[in-house]
Length: 193
Image (cartoon, rainbow, N blue to C red):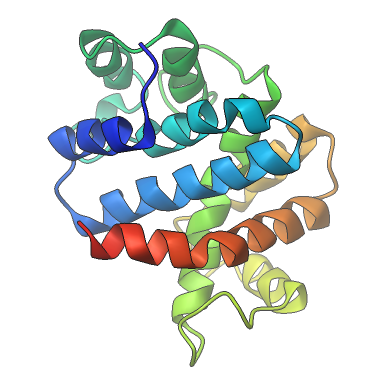
């Protein structure tokens, strides 16, 4: 089964109640939608967004089984195998996930997941509380400060850039652009929760 973004959000909400986790799912879904259109996969944008929405479906309730429990939950919901694989492989090398990202979408999810958290935390530190006035140079300073948003793994972000064959600055800049382009949509969707 393919999920619309609304169906994916409803499924995410079945297992996630904390606003932080719901906001993260919405943010990653919107970023994945932006990347799909930017990288020439516009016809697959709904799929990319659904993967982004559901990538942490199991994290709130089963953090020790992250990306393993997700398979079970998504299979029970009738998700198509490609969506399940994409969700599971975003935990490659970090959890019990055994599949490495191969498709460009899987690599983007692996790379951008942690980075959206770092960018979101950096935005909250700004007087505007927005990414709209954030420059790449400011993001790079936050990236280099290991104490800032310490839960966002810089190693995973670097590894993700490498998987994509991109320079780190390219990944940082593109993901910042995605969050700027999608900020209003993210805020609207979060306000409707």
